[in-house]
Amino acid sequence: MSARLYAVADIGPDRDDPRECFALVRDEIRKADIAFCQLEVNLTDRGARLPQVRHTHRATTATASALKDAGFTVVSFSGNHCMDWGRDGFFDTIDSLQATGLAVVGVGADITQARAPVIQTANGVRVAFLAYCSILPANYWAEADRPGCAPMRAWTIYEQIEPDQPGTPCRVHTHANRADLAAMVADVKAARAVADVVVMSIHWGIHFVPAVLADYQAEVAHAAIDAGVDLILGHHAHILKGVEVYRGKPIFYSMGNFAIDLRMTPEHAQGKGFREIQSLSPGWVPDFDSLYNFPPDSRMTLVVTARATTGGLTDIGFLPAFINRDAQPEILKADDARFGQVVDYLRWATQAAGLNARFHARGDAVLLELSETSA
Image (tube, rainbow, N blue to C red; front, top):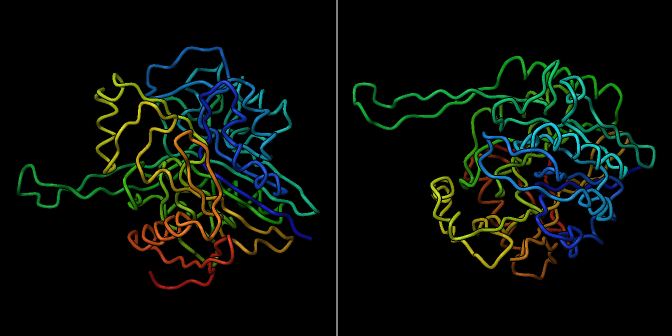
C-alpha cells in the first residue's frame, strides 16, 4: 500500500477568482492522494489590520474552495500572517478551510489545538502533519488562553568580531527556544506513535537572501528528525534554499513561493520598508503591471513529491516549476531550459550553504539520494 504525497509552499491569492492561481498546476496536484500547502493570507472580509503587520492583504473565503478544487487536502496556517486581521480574520480563515473539507494544521484557539497533529489517511497509510512558525510578530503565537500558531521561537546573539574595534562587523548566532524545542519534540513523538509517516512544516529562516541559513534551523530540523520526523518542509524565505539529508531524512529548508500574488505601486516601491527588503536580493526591480512582484530568484519553485507507505517515505524528490508574471506556477518538463535552471539553482544553494543533498533528474522529475555524504 502506498499514497502519493505532494507539498508546496506559500499560497496567497489577491484576485477576484483565486482558482486562476492554479490553472497551470491543477491537473498535476490532483494526482496526489495527499497534498499540502502553506497559506499566507487571511480568508475574510472582517477584522482590522493589526499595527505590527509589515505587509498583508486579505483573500476571499472562496479561496478555500479554490484550494480544494486544486487538489490540496491539508493546509498549514502557521505563519507570520495568521493573525494579521485579528481574531475575526483568524477564525474566519480556519472556518472557511474546514467547511470545504480541508484539514488545517499549526493553529488553534489555544496552544493545545495549535500543536495537535493532523492525520491524513490514504490507501491505508497514515500521514501525520505538524506545523510551526519561527517568524513571529508580537502575540501571533498561541498560548493556554490565546489563539494563534504553534511557535518555534529562536533567539539572536550578535558577537562583535573585533571587540576592541568600535563599529566593526559582527557574527550573528541564533539558537532555538528551549521550551518550544522540547514541546516540538514531544509533539513529534506523540504523532510518531499514531502514524506511519510524520511530516513537519515550518515557517522559518531568512527571507530573500540567497542560500544563507540561520543557525537555529539545523538545530530544530535535526531535533525533529531525531524525534521521529520523516520529512521537513520549510518556507517563508520566498526563494529556494538548500536541501540537507540528515539520518536519511530530507530537510527542504525553503520550497520557495508557489501561488502568491503581490501587487506593487510606485508609492509602495518608494517606501522605507520595501526598500529595506529590496536590498536583500540583487536585481529586484518592481513591475507595476505584474501580479508577481518578487525578486528574480523567486520565480523558481518546486513541488516536493514522495511515496508514503506503512514503512515510511520512498521516492522523495521534486518537480521543478516556474512562476509567471501573473503569479501562476507552471510545472516544467525536462526539455524546458527552465527545468535545468531550477535544478542548478537548488544545487548551488545547497552547496553554498554547506549542505550535503544530492539529486538527479529522472524524466520530468528530480529524485533525492538519501544516503548521507559530507557537504
